[in-house]
Amino acid sequence: MLNIQSHVSLKPYNTFGIDANARYLVEINHADDINTLLQLSDFVNIPKLILGGGSNVLLCHDFDGLVIKMNIQGIEVIREDDDHVYVVAGAGVGWHELVLFCVQHGYAGMENLSLIPGTVGAAPLQNIGAYGVELEQVFESLTAVHTRTGERRTFLHADCQFGYRESVFKHELKGQYIITGVTFQLDKRPTFHTRYGAIQETLAEMGISDDALSIKAISDAVIRIRRSKLPDPAQIGNAGSFFKNPEIPKAQFDTLKGQFGALPGYPIGEDTVKIPAGWLIEQAGWKGYRAGSAGVHAKQALVLVNHGNATGQELLALAKQVQDSVQEKFGVSITPEVNII
Ligand code: FAD
Ligand code: EPU
Image 1 (cartoon, rainbow, N blue to C red):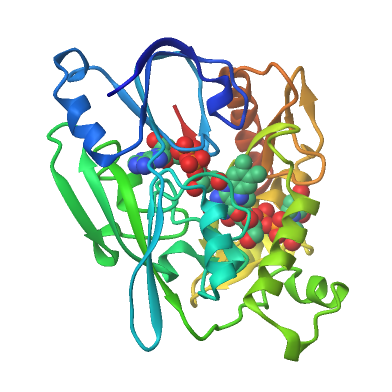
Image 2 (image 1 turned 180 degrees about the vertical axis):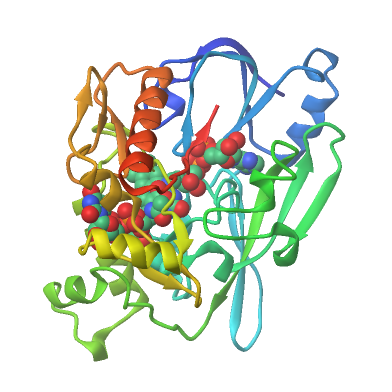
């Protein structure tokens, strides 16, 4: 039985804590609920917004349509072979809950992705990544339902066109499929990824020597680093990194490096360098900036924050000012990672 509510505040449904309203909201607990929903003639032609944990959206106005809040639960091991364990999880499962399940059972591959907010169903959308690992490295397939026809489809890795914070679901198929479940391929024998960021120093601080290394230790280290750097949405509204880190041609990087000697850069292949947008934004003078309730986080300039009652429009205007000033100072364009609704 579907419970379609009307005139619902979305404030509890987005981690920015934006107080926008939805004309209708429905919670989906089973994939079949979506087919039931699509048979209701009143809802066929109205705009739809799929929401998981609301940790990567900026709501810029009231939503005059139907918000579909994904709540499909369940984590299950579906098969295994000599090397791998295959785990399927419902779209509404909390991402970190799934990571903890895998870490506890010794299924390796997701530990570097510990403590990323949000749901399993949203994770393929931007191919979530952190500390040297991306979702695509553990992704096997996903199931989805077409938002208009109700057709069910399985997407394999090659169908998803994964990239850095990208997938087909943000482009050609944007808004067309509701992801209902994701299957992951985890390793029975771990490969430890400890080279990125402060993982090694943090493991040392935790007293973990190389021979005591485990996926649990890496997960704990990542959790520790994240808690020290990123604002907790329960304390202060935010959606993590607001912008993606730009990838620029090596020649442009070399010129900028000549002007700004401290500019960090990470080579991507031979001709491209990824640069931290947080560094650019900090150097442009925005770190800790605040106008009313909209601000730039004081510890991580890549994170825009809502100190209380900011509107989506206020945060969007701040994002535009930040983009313009980075463009002006460095000639580099930074684009939002967050989905602007
Ligand atoms: P939502 O915000 O609800 O939705 C995001 C987008 O996905 C929307 O366009 C929505 O329509 C769509 N969507 C949601 N569910 C579905 C579905 N079932 N089917 C189809 N479309 C769907 N991200 C990283 O990659 N790495 C990080 O390290 C990271 N750190 C973060 C730290 C903080 C403090 C915060 C607040 C966010 C961080 N994020 C990070 C961003 C965010 O956690 C991820 O993008 C996450 O996958 C969003 O999940 P969600 O369920 O909250 O998605
Ligand atoms: N930096 C600054 N000032 C700042 C912030 C960052 O100078 O205020 C510079 C520093 O040089 C630092 C570098 O930026 O060494 C990188 O910073 P950090 O390690 O904090 O990572 P990030 O590039 O800002 C990315 C992801 C995060 C992910 C971390 C760890 C993107 C857009 N963001 O952030 O993902 O958790 O790396 O892997 O790729 C997210 O997507 O929401 C997110 C939080």
